[in-house]
Image 1 (cartoon, rainbow, N blue to C red):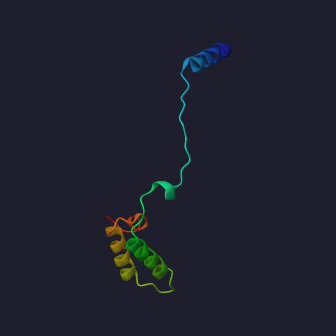
Image 2: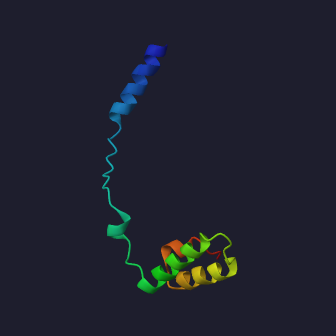
Image 3: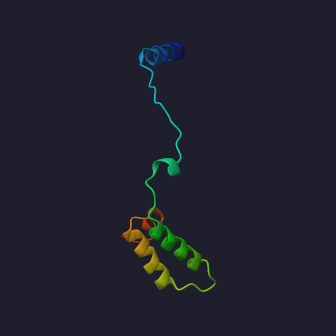
Length: 81
């Protein structure tokens, strides 16, 4: 019985067309749109401020929001919608 099941499974697999997905490796820096330099500067400033010993989270959130308003990818992930 198991031989028949194996034979049927093999027949079905051989009858199916091969699924050929072409994969092309790309880097984000080569495909993503360029960042606004002002927005990126604000994002870097907020990251630097957040690494301080006692950060001012209100100021950091404000800076992240300023960068997100200019569609900075990193800042968009840091602010709530």
